[in-house]
Length: 246
Image 1 (cartoon, rainbow, N blue to C red):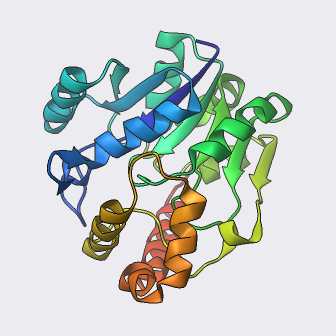
Image 2 (image 1 turned 60 degrees about the vertical axis):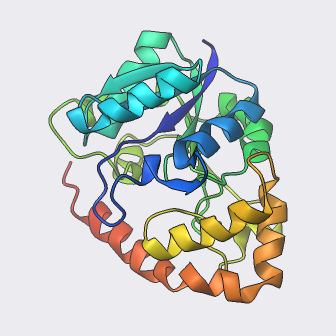
């Protein structure tokens, strides 16, 4: 594969257990929404999960319901998992979809994938609404970082590795609405689950992210259900980044 979509997901989660297989309505689960939205990018899809027994059920569910590739690798060393996934499927560039971001903007990925040739990695600007976009990364970027993550290390937060390897990084900024920090679109707490449960009754898996954001801006009661969690989430992310010693 020259270009692909990699959905990074695992069942182990402390704040919202087994959220990747959590049901919203009928038989619609988080992983269903992720895969169905990823299909709109029109690239081969790979689920990159772990070799842990806890992810056996996730793999079986995906194998039963979808014709996509599955790669199982390291649990905490996410960069090593990506690297070996790239190797196995001969991927040159990949749209990285985080398993928490079920209403990610597939149009943003579709538009930006062609620009990765000018950079090692495209990443979300820190002002962007959480859950819209994660990364588009190249194999050349992973090779440059390889010596820093080859050992047994927790690479869940990749920013320290991109800085250490001096990657040519482009932080993406889009239209104003994508940077409106009164919206939170990631699944990490029970309040996030409540928001997504409301949105899924109004929108479908193909709905444009910009329409979902506009709805939340007009319906502040919905947005306020989980937005207070954003500061907790960011503090936790910063703590994880600061704990990495390369």
